[in-house]
Length: 284
Image 1 (cartoon, rainbow, N blue to C red):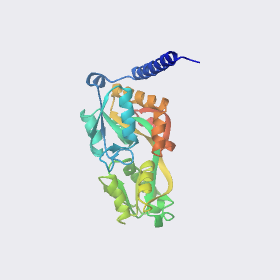
Image 2: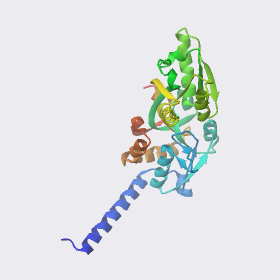
Image 3: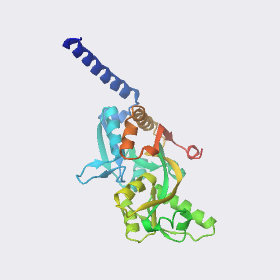
Image 4: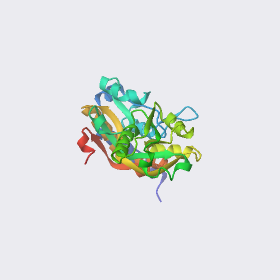
């Protein structure tokens, strides 16, 4: 039987090995110079449930926030979160006011003309409506001629334009696109019957369907499936390498999938964090 001293030595060796492994993992991630010098991992985030929002206790929660906390830990840096309106993110990146828009933004051809992305999930746009209308709008072109709510500047906003083009090419009347500044307002537009349905990312729509206590349901199949992830300034390779590196480390060590599964988003997981700089990459 091992003596206490031997057991203690084994425990110490194991702990040192774990610390060494964590240190090697952090060193393997290319840390941006501004993170190295400041000791801070500063991100811009926006309220977009369930990815990032403030709970009833006033705490920031959501898979995006948990991933940011895990990323900061791997980088041995202090996490700093700056709340920024969604529509201000790309202008702020282009102006150099922020380095990383840490969220779940869809990589579109239009956006890739202005910024780059580090994708960490894939998802599509879905239709959400009242339970009584689920069968009516099971086919998305059934929305043609109706009123559809979307949040300004989101992937759903772009998808609405694509769907309206589909209506037109099918000889159907285009639907009225009601644009709202926040996600919550698009949801309320449907619940209050000011809109027949709203378009949203599959994960976000699933969340609101769940917390609506039966007032909202998703209908039909998702469309316009595209990579989704963090946004960085065009050509900022230093930040791109760091963000892709830390996301890949979280994928490889299992933290990433554990967080997604916790929030019921495992279906949207990817095996590799990919940097998108050109529209040709999303058309493959």
